[in-house]
Image (cartoon, rainbow, N blue to C red; front, side):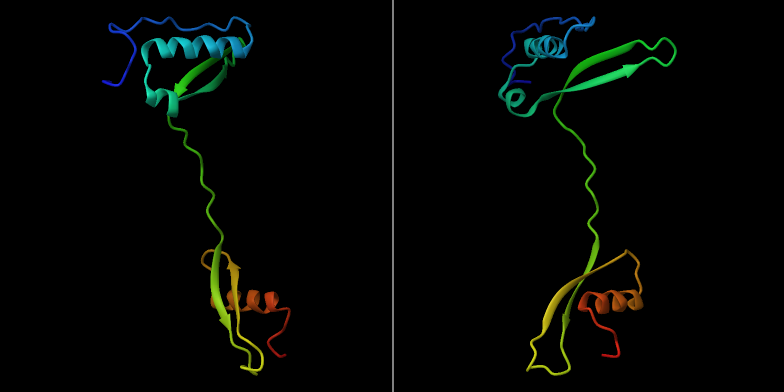
Length: 127
């Protein structure tokens, strides 16, 4: 609050109505109204607007607003599970060791890990 350069007392800013006007115009008016109450380096660097659209299921009236926001939560995809392995061939050291990652589903058994390893090596256990 003490870094806010907006004059005190803060301006009373009415809600911006879209009324069928282009989004760019409504967004600009909304942002200017926000800056009349919140003017700081923090706002300049970290705040932005998000567009929200809501439709009434009864009358199908669509309301569009542009709201200031500082944080945007996004889902972070979970990485697949991999197991780092070093394969030591039977004829080592004539044939070098091989390091590899084998992707397995969460909760996979050792049998599943072994099956995927043989597949990745393009071999069968009998070879």
